[in-house]
Length: 195
Image (cartoon, rainbow, N blue to C red; front, side, top):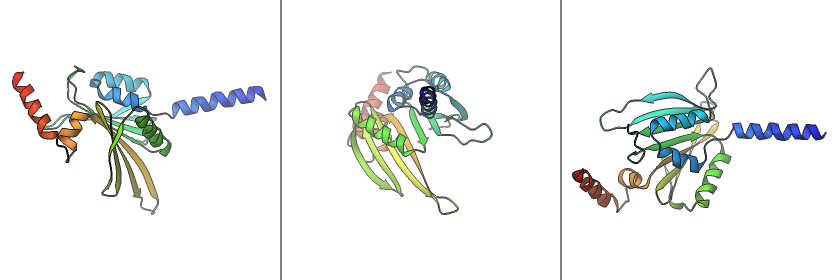
């Protein structure tokens, strides 16, 4: 009986370790990495590259990875899209991460961790039927979305999205209500003139 309990503990620990996605802390750190370093980190954590997009005028490059991807189709437990400039200098990187996942437990763990590390809920609303909650820390903004869609059979499927960006990126490109937008745009222009 003791061996059976030990076996069960090892089995379930291994199962849950395998089913884990990235933590909020890991995602915040990954956003700051260069593409090469990000790819190596994800590869070591059982993520596989599935698609890439070269930059077009006015856009950034992107690469999509899947976690626990099935061998014969593109279904997976989670998808991560890394949107990046092509700088290997991590101090100059302006990167974004979009994580798609499918479990409410993971969503709740992300919310709990954001609160634990002191992120403040700055906006919560429904847009086009999607719940959006925006949390902001000292340097990073996290946008969590809940999307509920009906399939062809009328069954509601829920998926979750986590968008991770720098606060400056958020204020300049995504916050329509930002009073800091003009100030930040002027600061960037001045910095560019100096360089």
